[in-house]
Length: 161
Image (cartoon, rainbow, N blue to C red; front, top):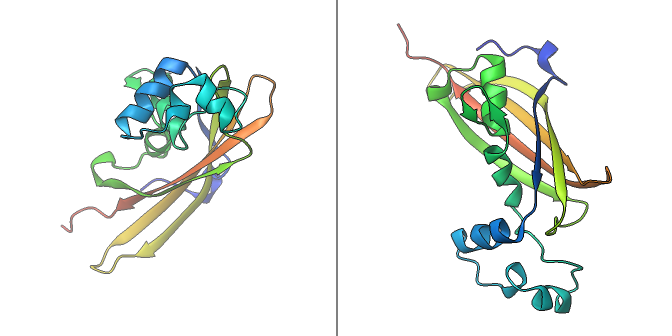
């Protein structure tokens, strides 16, 4: 583990992507969510939306737009790589979303992923666990905040030698 407290506040990823009707429909379908607001503008209007809304976890598609040297990258993976964590020993520990408003078709979201917490603790079976929290703030095309996504990744200690 090479994560240090000096890494707090470090930007590990920036991404921009459009909220497109086809992608929203595909995402809702992948979630097996039959709600018509994700497919039909009239249903969205009746539900109180100006435009077709994106499902709550839609920002997960950002990983497909974050182009880096080795392909695409999620905020969690970007943090793990930037900090030198051992990827085969990392897992997603927790993920949350906090909304200022629901993203809607026609928005263009820009996200910036920042390391907001690093801590260690002893594991129940021995060995250190490293917890790294990454907060991504997404803003729309006017710069207004839309959603904050927070993910905590956990790196387990290596095998004892």
